Image (cartoon, rainbow, N blue to C red; front, side, top):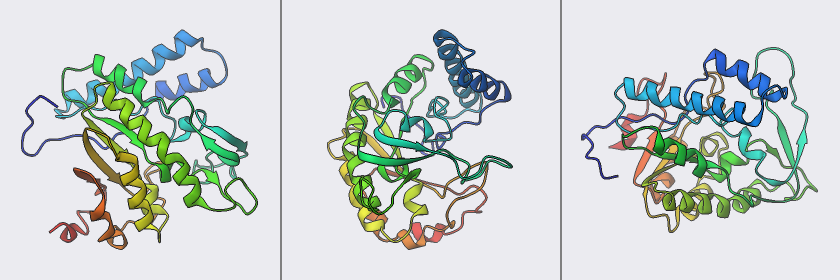
Length: 266
């Protein structure tokens, strides 16, 4: 990142809100009413909107708003092999955590063609002259909508599933650096949502960033589906293990928390 930044610079976590017209367009894309070019232009327009919003707000470091990702991680499952789709548990009423599509591992999961974040980043670079960062979900978060059950491909072992995703995340981060990213952020809200194994999650994170020659941020939150958290809003149980992460920056959630637990950063 060659541009000089102020001491207290600003950047966003990653996801930008979808405007109403974009939801309408997504419905038409899903229904097959848009051609390939129509769909590409729609996603480009939405990404430009997110970038312009950040620029108008005076944000110092810009991201693409993750506008090409549906509900944060759902888009990535289409890039994985070894998954079988399952019906959502809830199909009526308010969209909730049990409304999202779910998956089952029928064999060991692979990501042979990457997660697609490089293409997102390449477009971002063409749309702003300001410093930029790239975001990529971590292995625990990528696993969150994959069910684990006795007798499945991972025999109910979520940690084994997550470790199988580590090489894909590491390769994705290195590809981002090769594409010009000098700041990458790994998003792992699920590390705070699924308690009790933080030491293993730290090892996974460090394996993901091994050999990644860039500024590395680690984003941990509690889930945020339509402003509703999925886990208990507390980082306390994650310490001191979290301090063993090989990263340059922690990106924590304080929205609606009034800077709770700030005393832990002394």
